[in-house]
Image (cartoon, helix red, strand yellow):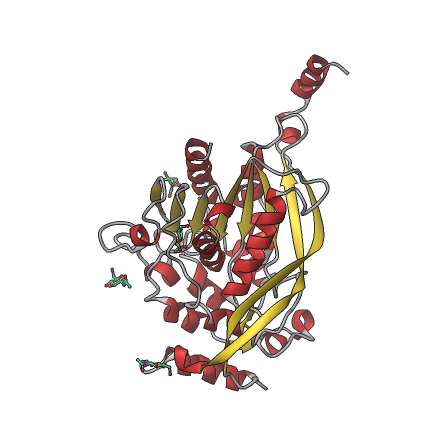
Length: 374
Ligand SMILES: *[C@@H]1O[C@H](CO)[C@@H](O)[C@H](O)[C@H]1NC(C)=O
Ligand SMILES: *[C@@H]1O[C@H](CO)[C@@H](O)[C@H](O)[C@H]1NC(C)=O
Ligand SMILES: *[C@@H]1O[C@H](CO)[C@@H](O)[C@H](O)[C@H]1NC(C)=O
Ligand SMILES: *[C@@H]1O[C@H](CO)[C@@H](O)[C@H](O)[C@H]1NC(C)=O
C-alpha cells in the first residue's frame, strides 16, 4: 500500500479512535547488584507494634540513622511488571519514550487512572509520546520482595537504571524499539527514585520531570502521621492476605485524603476508587528515604519540578517559596540542569493526577518536554 493511501485512510479515522493509545503489559526480570544499609527493626507481629514504630520514628528525639546496623548485599533478579503504550499507528513513530515511576500507595495505574481528565498516559500518547509505566518492586504484580531489607530507595534506583539501559539498547521487549530520547517522569516517591537515577547515572536520561516532590524533607513526618502504619494484611485481609508484616498501609480513605488530596479540588469518587485499589508500601522503603544521593552535578539535561500548590508531604501545605525561590535547595541539587524549571499547579494537593485540573498540569509537562528535550 502506498504511503499516501495509508495517510488518506488515517485521515478518515474518527479523532476519538486516533487518541486511544495502543498498550500491552508484560513482565521481565530485572537484575541488580548493590549494597544497601541493614535496618535493625524487629518484625511486626501486629498493628500495635507497627503503629508504635511510627510514633517512635516521628518523635522529636527520633534518630533513624541509629537503626542502621550494617550492610546487605543484593545480587539477584526481581520480576517487574510493565505497561507500554504508544500512539495509534497513524501518527509518526514516537521519538521520545517517557518512563513513569509511581509513588507510595499507588501502582502503575496512577498514570492511567479512569476518566480522560486524569489519564496521563493518554494525554502523553495524544502528544506523540510513548510511555512505559511499571509497578515498583514490592507493588502490584511486581515481586513482593523482603520489605524489611530488600525494598529500599537505592534498590528502586538500580532497577530504574537497569530498565533504562535495557530501553536504550532496545532489549527490554521485542516490540519496544530503542527510542531516540528517554524522559523520566516521577510522582512523589517515584520522583525521589528518578532524582536518584540521574544523580548516580546521569547519562541514562535526556530529561526529568519530578512531580509531587521538592528537596525540603521537613514535612515527611506529617505525611507519616496522616498515613499511619497498619499491617496491610490486617487492614484489608481480602486484598492483602499473604503479604509479609513489613508491608504497611493507612487506615481508610480519610487518611488517604489527609496525605494526598486537597478539598474540594477532587472528586470524592476518585478518592474512593484510589482507596479501593491502594497499594501497601514496605517499611524499609520509608526508612531508606534519606539514604539515596540526590546531588546531580553531572546531569545537564532539562529538569522540571512540578507540584500541587497545597502539597502536604513535600511543601508543608504551601509550595510557594519551597519549590522555587531563594530558599529552594533544587538549584544545588541540579546546578547544571539546562534548564531547571519549577511550576506550582494551583488548587491541587499531593496526588496531582487525581485532582480536577490534572489534565492542565499534563499540558505544562508536555509543553516543557516539547520545548526542551530535542
Ligand atoms: C544518630 O545516630 C547516629 C548513629 O548511631 C549517631 O552517629 C548520631 O550522632 C545520632 N544523631 C543524633 C542527633 O543523636
Ligand atoms: C524548608 O522550608 C522551610 C520553610 O520555607 C525552611 O524554614 C527550612 O529551612 C527549609 N529546610 C530546608 C532543609 O531547606
Ligand atoms: C561527575 O563526573 C566527574 C567526571 O567524570 C566525576 O569525577 C565525578 O565523580 C562525577 N560526580 C558525581 C557526583 O557523580
Ligand atoms: C488549571 O491548571 C492550569 C495549568 O496550571 C492553570 O493555568 C489554571 O489556572 C488551572 N485552573 C484552575 C481552575 O485551577
